Image 1 (cartoon, rainbow, N blue to C red):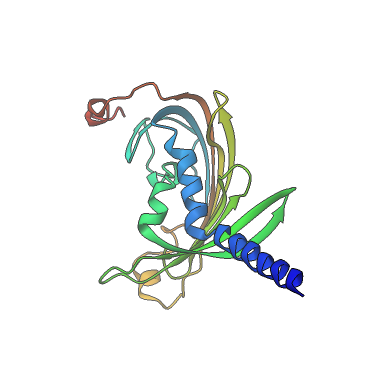
Image 2: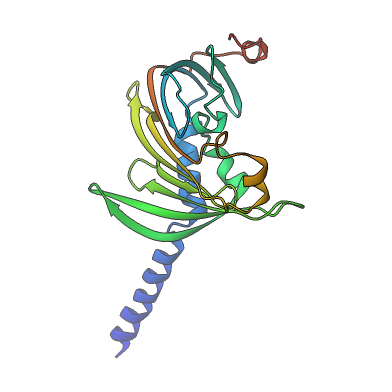
Length: 227
């Protein structure tokens, strides 16, 4: 009986220890952030293919530069159809802007993914919004994102990553899809004619020619961007 009590007590300690070590949404995002924090700065060539409803946009090539924590710069003739926050994805911003919760795990393409729900932190005068991200449990990279920035608008991102210089993990391709389902009687639809406001579209961003941790200076980012 004494032995059984000892074994039972040991089992309780073991299971309690396992629970304390279980991953939380915050720990998952911290792991993603730690991956990205190894990249102090980078430059890359970005090729963008834009397919927007009622718009014809030629393929674009953009030279992009980034430096921690949030300096970003582009060199291109025209990037007006590319929202900056699409190719300036910084995992460090997620914990600052959102309250995360772990929804569970999923299997896709032989990978285990953590699904997280992100709710915007309360701000006076702003409506709370939710997004969802999927994180690769092995590489600690974001592989998918679903966001609902405004009523009726949905944005989906699929992210493929590559190992650069044998140690840095950065996006190699981002596929984005936009869908806007606006009530025909809404004020927004009446103000913005459907002939001028694309409701659906997609963007494919391909990254190449990465140069990582080359010592980009703050002064470089303060210079006027080339157009």
